Image (tube, rainbow, N blue to C red; front, side, top):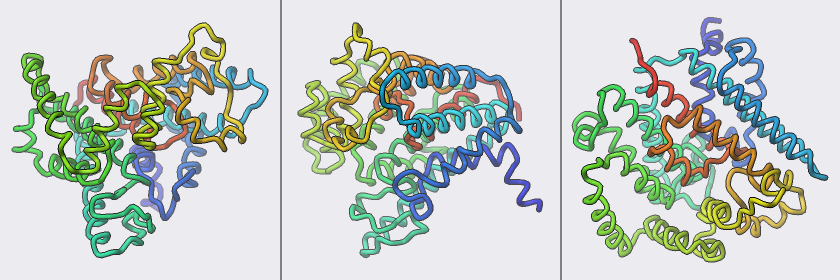
Length: 394
């Protein structure tokens, strides 16, 4: 009985929701909509009312966002209430988790160690996936291997459903870890400090990101390198980036080639070329390009959207890669996107000009949608911001 009741403590609940949103255990959850996540999100309003019924900033902004989304969606002839309801489940679950965190469920050391251990678990799973795929075994359910055709020693998914989603989660986990070390030390840790004091975490993180076979991981590593740049070395850093770029274009490693090709295609601002160059990367990059180049501020559709996607439009998925915009602007309008940005900055990102902003902008598009790994990233950001902006007392 004690063990069962311990699952319902505020700390245990926060830990469960954080872990579940940052992972995808395929043998239980599959590749699509996760029954486990739906069940937990269905319970979140009850947890919110019983455990943490606080009128927080997150609750206020989320309610505003939900109101605008609902109004914009119902302005259209066709409304998919299942899509809206699923989005609202993610939003209310985030409020519940946010309230738990700001209720003090984690101590500073607990969260710092949690980030460290989370990165290591990703590494151990990746290492075992490498070993088994090397000998030709692709069905090891407890290692999140369920026969994926792409599994190989240089292409693995570790604890989510695909390499690119794991790369995103790991990038935010490591940035959170860096922020906690910064808060602990009182100044930014440099690579020498990490090598001398957190070598295991540093090497585990780099190993997974380099060998998982994801172009997204390469981009994330470049973004995270900005964390270590000091203002007095900006010129030197710019020169090193230029030299480094000239070097990596000749590196014969597929993820690096994909990153270079993606950057070159993105710089053209041509969605057709981007889609042809890397179809997977285009899903993330094209919405940014379209938002910057094809947003008509004089159109009512820009501000209020076109409504939820119909079944017929879903069948033309490939064409949406070339036309999609950031943050559900097509569906719920620019107004909802701006409120979504307010939610992200109020609850998740400590400063406008920060590595967090670049990482969130380029890896998950400042998007509020129905993908659980994106919410996992926001959970990490929100928890990190809580400790980064507040004094802690052990």
